[in-house]
Image (tube, chains in turn yellow, red):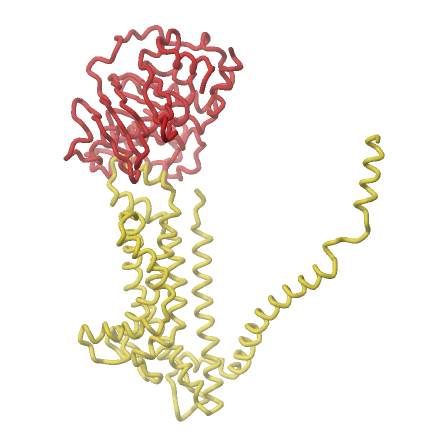
Length: 301
Length: 297
């Protein structure tokens, strides 16, 4: 058989006019995939749109500048909740970030991974990240009792709970960022006579900062939406003054939303919807910042 | 002859394509050196290295002469890099690594109890296989070593210039000292790493296949630099490339790997150590001859 006839026959065989990629079975399967995607995204979109429509009437300055009001439901505001959440984030970060980075650096740069206690810590870090947030609330209540502070619903307690909550997240992401720094950089530094400490402080951590910042912000954006641990600590849903310090009683945005959504007056429910949108905007803003930092400072080795 | 030689060195990317057979290799006839190093700067005595249960290097005895370039050559897995990393205690960083025997630096065993590996490394610098500049400016790359070791520096600018001139890099980078070292080419990065090492004013410079990631032109520049640095430093270089050893080194140590009869693990050992001219023209050991003539390896 000559080469020419072989080629000709092959041409005929491949030009069948229909594609097996478009068989009924494939199309049904493809349709199912589309439906799954559509269903997941649609539910979310409908939910957010519904909330936004319900709260649309309340997108006014009073929503963020005024305290909550039981006498004028249509003019109630979330000033205390927004400020409370911001204060909580600030002190959560102050507590969780140094601790988390230090723990991660120890595990990556100093710990001997062959030791049983270091291995136990490693395994349990993953478990800690999966612990329900309300448990951290309980833990913070215990800590507050231990250090002898009886006041309920204050910044310190909430920040301790949220810091404990996001600590595993920060440790895990920091470890990943530290691990991404090439071994050659460490060796180069050590070969010049630098100590492990100098190498960590001057080479590894500066290179890992973008990753650490991203992880921290993502952790905080998880914490800002939490209500359960704060309820355990007795945060009030109605506070009519700005937070003034660590011992100042506060409320938080999720707590206020929780409190208002169970109210029977429609005006309060609309206000809650509007507050949900405010909370979502805050979280999306933080996530956007995280993505921005990651893209801007990401280093390719 | 030529073909077999190329095959032997095909594993290494820094083979000089224009280099032919050994007879063409230029050996510096001007340098007359004693048969064995007198007052060696460094010495390995009965050096054995283990990684866990794996016996990586067996009974190595070597001495490294002052202001000489000593090359360590041999096939992959023969333990030459392991020996090099013992000389400034970089093997300490490998978990499970254990060193037996002595490594003498001016007569002092650097593995003796009480010796600080950090202090050892300030005297014995190292240049790695892959250029590894820090993600900092060219200036800060050089200044890093003197800063972390707490060296007394009158004028850091002068020290940076001196180090860059010493590494034959000054003219190429003098206008962009504040720019990132990552903007340099591979060969420039490797010379920057050499400059970074000499900025801390070491006594010995260890080089672990310093040209294997470089193209032939960059390789030639680094080799020229090595010959120049020999006047001030003692250089110990591991190379895959036999022509490189022949071109730059004063003495050559040939290593090979011997499979263990029971486990099959390959243990590295020193076969022959002599003047480079002798190793390449008149080796005493059959294994050395087979390796350098390309019959093995």
